[in-house]
Image (tube, rainbow, N blue to C red; front, side, top):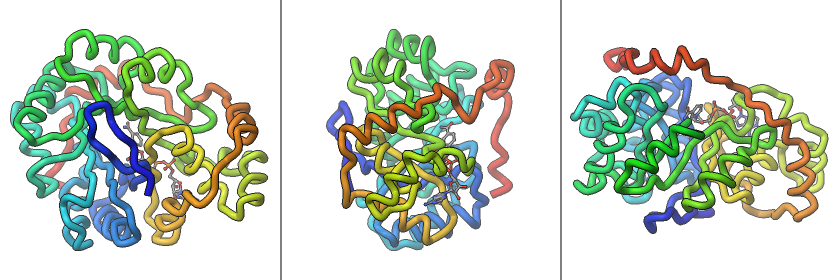
Length: 281
Ligand code: NAD
């Protein structure tokens, strides 16, 4: 496993499992399967309504707490709930979390950020993340924070490699990029790209493995989602080859500057009022 060093010295695995859209049953099984297959990083969120199941999956795997890097995200409805961090820890069944994000720049996100900073000082959070805070929102946090964030989680893949965000905001602040929708969220166009298929044949890997390796060679952290034990195993078996500079350039050429998901500004505003229904888990 490759590890990435964050700007506060914390080291985190470069590849993990993401459990977005997983039912509690699926999350519990997939987390256990991933940890038993050699994963050390799991990414969930308040709003996925599977944090309890993720915690159960971690316990079922038998892996020691210190050998798993857990990330979750506070949802905007929680940014003024002073117990939000404790409640997140309680759902996950853990005493501290390795990486805690603000999920979206909606509502009183500056208060949410201060709350996470306090939790860092209290030893409850090891690293701070922002998710979907590109542009003005990132600047707002940087202008008000006491502790700089360590990670930015955003949609990122060869069709949308986040060039501007990286050059203008992340690199100058030594903040690591964590890619969501790394494989295109089930859309087959990316895995069927001729350059990806050609490289898969050359290295004896699957197209998904080529894409995931590309993320890590770009120094990104990547969290593909999968419920299938075979794909889960495949998705960390990506470190036995290296793409050449020419191949990295060929992949850079398929940048379409297009996302798979465009956030609606009206939705963004309304998310502060959308409390996750945790009692359903
Ligand atoms: P993804 O790009 O990881 O794609 C998942 C799809 O790829 C699924 O259909 C899966 O079956 C398929 N797949 C997985 N491994 C495969 C393989 N080896 N071969 C072929 N197909 C394979 O998209 P995702 O799961 O939606 O996103 C990954 C993670 O990113 C989420 O679970 C979540 O943790 C995070 N995420 C965060 C945000 C955010 O706002 N912060 C938003 C979306 C997702």
